[in-house]
Structures are given as C-alpha cells and as structure tokens.
Length: 189
Image (tube, rainbow, N blue to C red; front, side, top):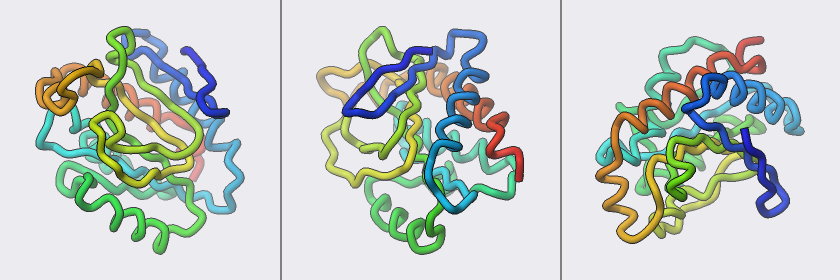
C-alpha cells in the first residue's frame, strides 16, 4: 500500500498483484469510514460507469457484485442492469441526496493512470470527479472514493477505455468487492 497527499487529502494505492491487497484495502476503507463525521450509519455505493466499454465497466460490475451481498446498512446505485453514467449521474446524485440524507457516499469508478499503476486500486478522502480522465465535465460526488486504474492515460483516452482488457477490470472488481465484503463498518449492521 502506498499513501500520497493530493490537495490536502490522502490517497491510498493498493496493488491487486499483492496477495494482501484486499485485506489492506478493507482495513483502510474501514478506518476512513470511521473517521467521517456523519450521523447516519447508512452507506451508499455509487458505482459509476457504462457496460458499453470494457474499461468503463468497473463501476457497474462492482455494483452487480455488491448487490448480491445482503448487508442492511448500505444501498447501491449503478449496476449492470441499471448503470449510472454521464447521462444520468446528475439525476442519480439528486435522488441520493433526497432519499439518503446524511448517508456516507462512496463513489466508485474506473480511472486511467500511468503504466506503473495499471491494476492498482485507489482509495481516498473527499469527492470523486468522474469523467476527468476523458475530459468530461461531470459533478464531483462522494465522501470517499474508490477507483480502479484500468489502463494508461494518454492520447485517445476514449479508445483506451474501449480496448482495456477485461482481465484487468475483473481483478480490480474482485479485489474491491472482497475488501468491501470484509470491511468491519459494513458487517456490523
């Protein structure tokens, strides 16, 4: 696990090739959830992305996998059946704010990064700015964020999302879901 300061907030990096990745991710996620000053114990997972591009499907795949778990204190937006993407993100955020007041919002999305970080999970404090890697201007959302670095950033970022290997996306999704599954704030209710 690597930790970096970005804009006065911590961002943690977890390598899915490390055998302890899911455990370290789960522990850090639990610590970040406990550190939030929220009155509600409800957690909303906002899984952003589209199933129409392999590289952008990380969020909906995670939403699909999480929807199979039956913990009482969380709600999921963004699955393979009902993805949350650029066209419906704003409406979904408004729905979450009206239906889940004071809940902890954890935004999840795919991201692009440098070649050394492909296959890494990032976990950080504060909102996620979805679409930033492909120059989309979408609203920032979340108290915490989780991203999976699915491919390298560079020219033709939209094309890179189309040609991302499904193997990378699935390894990231499996590790993130396993970490969430064993995260103690989610298991206690």
